[in-house]
Length: 488
Ligand code: AMP
Ligand code: MG
Image (cartoon, rainbow, N blue to C red; front, side):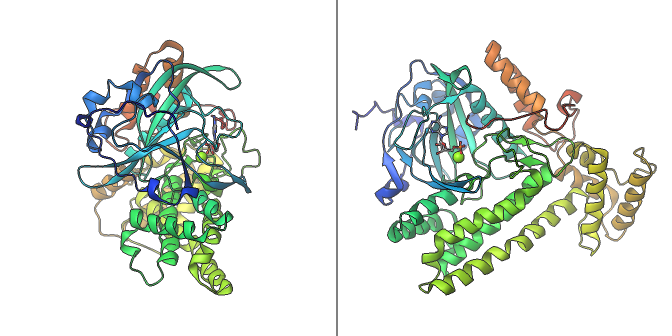
């Protein structure tokens, strides 16, 4: 190992306890970030820093720390080992361009991973350079903060620094490092790694660690590992339902991008849908639409089946019984997901109670939206139960009348219904062209004001306020015309 980098004083608020570093050695490789030429702070998330117990104003000036040139006190840097099914195919992966600095314990006793992404090569880099380009790191910053504001569990972005070095993709681009904050970076792929190496003690240590960290109440369960599987499924079902309810398309739902914490992780080719169409795909490499909007629930179930497989040796000593337990759990996913989806969609329509026809009511609206190529976000936000003669044509008017009749079956007054709807139908999402505009200004003119303006709008997506139409107008691009790129 190289000599340790200088450490920063504790007055910065660092308070590390690195439990992952104490897990079996097959799960990680100790190494330090590779220093960069000229670290420069681009964005720093003051509110997040404060919630982590960090001295925000002092650290905002310390680009060297967020570039990996200096280590915060108490850091024990490591690259995490993991595997994954990518587009259905199993591969050994690991942090090829990320380094976990450690786990920050917040003033309220919560534990968060502090990870540098783009921090240089690791033993898992394969043919990659271990680096990241500024555009995709700013994109992750914007979208993850938008997701958080929408109330969807997600990793967070603490900082983006430029490195003063170039990275080469199809072209030469400015290099950057993102500091990612996560409840943990434990993935379905992490379990697949231990299982693939047939290392049962590491597998069990990882499962125990995950229970301790994310599902403490289950530690004493009668069958804790089955309970773990079921609890992870529950969180994933809820998460994917939340994605569906805002039109978020992750784009690369490989098993290495599924966090056991239930947070959205790995913002690569993700984007929000404009016109409603379940077949929508943005990722340029997802040619078969495996990760299309409408496939996300089934793919989540498929990914959880890979987790169940990895956990088999812990589920039951008898292989056949283990398989039966796993299958029963995985089969329940569809029902669990649909429950969360119905809850989310009911809220979007202002429904407080449950009626047998609710699913059909929701689906007929979605069918209309698909036929009309209606904007997903704006259609829901514009719904108004008090409207008497909707302008959208007879099919919509008929649906609207049905909806009004349904609303009469519940006791809540109209103002309460509308307030509920406003709290569940965002006025603003990160529109693709607005994100691109912010990135272009940052990259081409070093102008961060455009991104800051966008972040300010995205921070309060449900609020009733005058939002300039530039933030609510769909891009106008035909579906397929906006492509996002992986291999970022
Ligand atoms: P992702 O598509 O970002 O989920 O990454 C998939 C895998 O590729 C992970 O193991 C990453 O660490 C690795 N990877 C992505 N980009 C690079 C890079 N520039 N250098 C090395 N490894 C990379
Ligand atoms: Mg990944």
